Length: 152
Image (cartoon, rainbow, N blue to C red; front, top):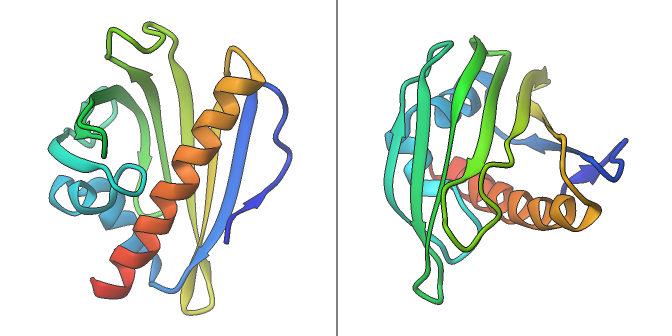
């Protein structure tokens, strides 16, 4: 289960422990074939996943919701420190979702015995409503990620 810590109206922080080694957890966040399996909320299907994992490289993921809506998110990698840290921008590309508002996501990976402690920090949101929508999305996505790791 996620723990929410130090979240404010404009900031989201989630922490979770995964029963997998840090190298595997980091790889699953940086390998597009792996990420395509788990990225997105429950019920979403990844249609395409492109990742150029290097500072200045871009990422883009297209998904189909259970209702058949196509959702696309994209960003640029700012920092990569294998297997400790990823920093990237995050924005919707969909016309019916607020476009142009970009947040910064920092994901850290820490050894936790034989497991990995993942901390996700995302900011700056335009409102608490937007932050809560992302909290729900990331929580569902991290549930899928935990299931993926048990099979990896």
